[in-house]
Length: 104
Image 1: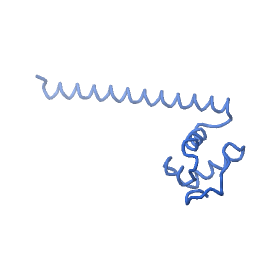
Image 2: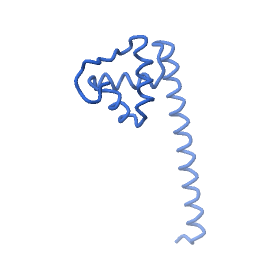
Image 3: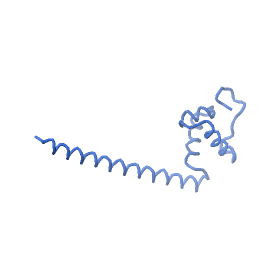
C-alpha cells in the first residue's frame, strides 16, 4: 500500500505530466493555426478569422451579422466590421434584401 506521502508524490508527478502535455498540445495547436493563417494569406489574401467567417457563411448562407456574432461569441459591432472587410474585395457580398430579422 502507498503511504500518504507516496500518494502525494505520484499525484504531483501525474499533475505535472498532464500540465506538460497540455502546454505542448496548446503550443502545437497555435503553431498549426499560425501555419494555416500564413498559407491562407499567401494563397488567398485572407486571414484565418476571415476563413472561419466564410466557412460559416457557406454552411449558413442566410445568416446575418447577429447569427455570426452568436456563433463566434463576439460582439455584433466586431462581426459587422469583419463582414465589411470581407465585403470590400467582394469575398461575400451581403444580400440586404433577404428577409429575416438578423440580416442588416
